Length: 338
Image 1 (cartoon, rainbow, N blue to C red):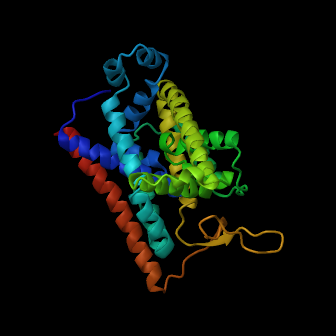
Image 2 (spheres, one colour):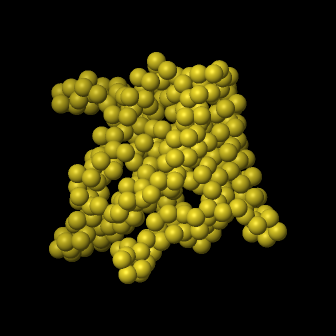
């Protein structure tokens, strides 16, 4: 699956990783969809499959160059670099946009998922009764997940590790949002907001040669949680990739049908017109996270009022989202042909 890459290809791969990272942080959006539409999903899965016993033997024997080539290191490192950049840049911008322009952000993502469904379905020319059944099961699975009741926050390190393993599914399973799974598990704010902000603040302080955080018990707890979460994510990424690699080899048609169904079912999660339902305690008081934000418990979805300018502007963002995906897919196909 390895291929020679030009400088432009490398920059584009970093940008794709950046898009995957941003998509993974938004509840309801799957980074795997980015990989699928951008045309590197199978290479991504098969590269992760190379993180196995042979790779471990190359590591402990000190054959680092052979290890780098074996695991398709150039591809994975550029992709991961983009994801890391995203968590400290684009995802911060997305946080701001969701707070101030929530309807239009969700509308854009809703359109992008519609565009993804069209693009993937267009190239899937093997529809039969079996694949339709798997697609329907995927749709029902996606819809069912979107209506589950979220749990409460739990910072037990074993549970955090499991959260990492489960949430990474958003990168490997298109249509299944890892960040939305974290909301259902009750740990979205803890793992993708508080702990990431703690790491960001720690890095900024280290650059300024300020090591006072070593005496901050809460900061150290957040960093410990983030390390365990990252370890769980790595374990989940490797184990899921082996499972998916096997399934893609044996049942590729059915797997693609389920993916199309899952992406379709995920439209319910990113439905733009919804009101937040906040978590409350026994006294009816709204719960606040460590950053002073009200904690979201769920969403109450509703149909839009067609006579308002906000609704029509949201429709415009849906169309823009569709054309962004189709434009990127067209650009990627043109590069593959040239």
